[in-house]
Image (tube, rainbow, N blue to C red):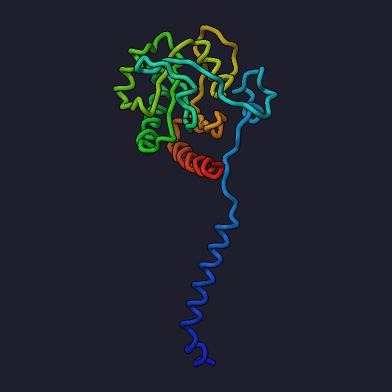
Length: 225
């Protein structure tokens, strides 16, 4: 008996290896392809959703906008057409979470520099302070690539409404002249202007998850096309 097993030992090893390969192939074929959720206002914490939108369960998209970037150029949804992008809200004089968020945006910019499908968009929540000149100084200090990343200013009410009603990235308080209570969230937006993820812009692990989710979203787009 031992002689028999010794004689066919090589074939048994080969058979096990082939079986392992076949099982791996079938596993990869049958494994569900990850798909990111499409977030609606009804899916998000009530405090982050404008009271007029808390009932919305489908078809939510980012509203049209017209703002001005650090180069003094007009930026609209057309500049982000057919792009995946990451949006956030900040202000240049912030000394708490904003510097950390900006550093993480810089990291995302660097790691996705060669990927023309991905753009970044940062909105100031203090446009009365963050003029074009101020944004330009800040962008140069942080190493912002204007072909990849727009820092935008403009009409305060428009920015506040974008934060509350489009990106769901601010506490739900009525528009006023007071500072916006914005969150640390980075918002992942797909090519159809839908929200596909929220990430803590101060957390390195959340940034890694964001980068992984961008890869998943790109695969999803490729399958649809």
